Length: 477
Image (tube, rainbow, N blue to C red; front, side):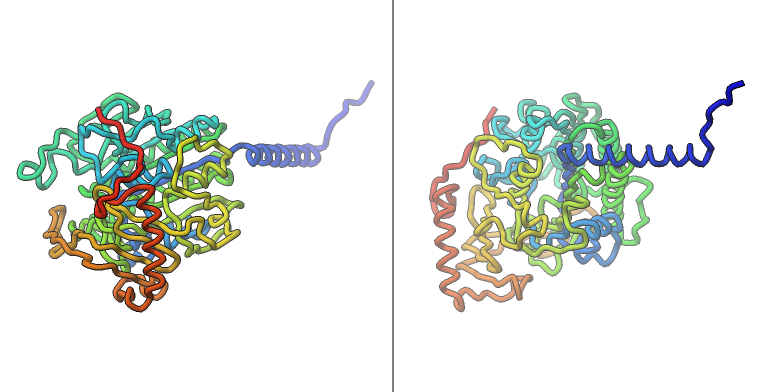
């Protein structure tokens, strides 16, 4: 009788363990050869000091703080303009928004929008084989030809403009006549909102589902949250839980959302092949008082090009590619993300001129040299109001809004117009709050920045100087 061959149980288990380990290693090697995923989280009106690791004291942001501990915290990261639509146009195209004809915040039924002929991040990455999605606030034109699915996105869930552009606006009637706020799923209106308390949760659920469904292919996930822009809304799970009022509750839920996205990336085994970027579109809307955040110690807020209006909290995380637990003080701007992501993903950025520069060497810690000689801050209808050059920030004469009396519980306060009457210069290295004008002490710096400004005026113009620019125009209806 022939004796049957058999494998002892311990040996069998060892073989299984080794086989599993080899398969895991193989899959890991395969994932590193796949183009990286991109997750871009963009909040609305969140101040520089509205994150724990950037100075928040009245509430905690454990997920964002952990993200910073595992990635890079950028302390001098700028938005292109201190207002909704212009900031988003810059983020998605790598252009100063006035180059492409987007100014201020577009109103509902606007006659213009982001020109579909522009190359967006979604266009670029979709052409490179990525699945693309936006879940949140669009605000780049609500005419059907300007909406997300015409701009390179495969999926869309969210609202077409700011959450306060609805009949419940506190100035509805005397100032505004807004219609209902529509909620979209792709190109279909699925609801008209009477309440926005579930939006952050719904956006997060869509983001988590998208990650799960696309774990085996490269994807670009854009999450532009409508919060903490007024009106403030929070789900029942977070209401009254922060101990810092409604604004603190909203920030807590946004922090939870970041945690859910990071957790899903890890669950799906794609955590180490995903770049996650967190930042905001502009500084806090100080006119709303306790319903606004903080930019301390920076000066002013939304609607101004002072540091509080345009310097934003920014965190990037990419395990193994970005050094963990580091801080970068090199100035960067949202326009630099487009060419940096193009470099990382080996994608073609299109044939139209852009203003952003590849900042991947700065992001990865290989250099602390800014990719730009200077950053230029426009506002209103193409007014060049400020320039950042090295540690210097210079302002040209212009008017700006200043909050004289903050509002309360969702009502805006009193705003007055203040003016910069002559050129002002600040050294941000030792005066980040911009309290001491040193223009008279550094005439050579002042003269050099004026020369840089003249070069920019030749490219993009300056309405205050009566100089016509060469910007591309947004199309009308």
